[in-house]
Image (cartoon, rainbow, N blue to C red; front, top):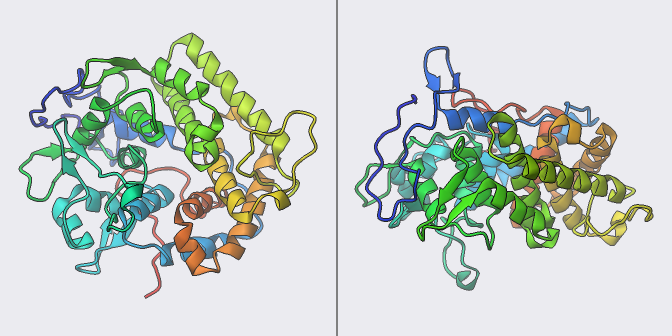
Length: 401
């Protein structure tokens, strides 16, 4: 993949500034000769955890948890997106039709492969503004929704975080192209509003839009990263999925992006820095005596006694602690909690995961929180690669035959 971007298909009411042209000069080299697209290099920088590797005292336990996660993965789109999040850009899965390994990103972007794997249709639908992942509909749970994303923008955020370039070709079954990943991005931007569940939209836009700082939706309404950060800071933690952590993940990604290429004003940058410091202080103050955090992690106040995880279910602690460790690992060094805070949390999380993941039914039912928790302990222990790589390296634990 080079610097030049292929021409985008004609779109009705295409959002301003999103015609797919190259954002800037390429930012790196993958093999010494082929330039790496700006957004791919940016994703590898901002999604690279910066907390030092730790000795959790049970590396084999981490490997056992990761193996169990892989062995209990189904073939739904949501599961594949979570596996890509867990193992990075080079995560693979076995194609149903051939039993041969395929990059998850290829399976998502190739309509013919997707049709063979899922058995019907495509994971992407053509819209007036580009391409879109269908969204899980709670009212239709009786129907097969295996090719839906669980949250708006989740598919785009997954591709962006994995470093998949905007000019990556995409095919849609029974639809004439050409299509590209940027068409998924165009649709998200065209339908963007500062309300609802915008946390995954924020991640995708933060990686694919810079150095541009503003975007315009299909109604001609202009938004900026300053507005987006202020909106997410304003919202209470309970508004965000997974114990309020996805709002924190989005904010931290935008902070990391701003450190690479300026997207925020000085005032908003200071506000964001202060907000994240307050949250970190809250987590250190409210960490349970065992080391984790529950769903109501924001409740403790300075001076209150440490809560006990006995008041929280193990499932609550796994969900909250796994997600928290993920975004804490993304913070710049000067904002991070103490290494002891992270170490104690990770050790407690590993103990809980080893116990709960013995139950395959539990693991399948709680695959989302289990993968986020497994990624946290995998990164901290060094079992999972800590540095996102271009599409030449792969980390994959083979499922048992």
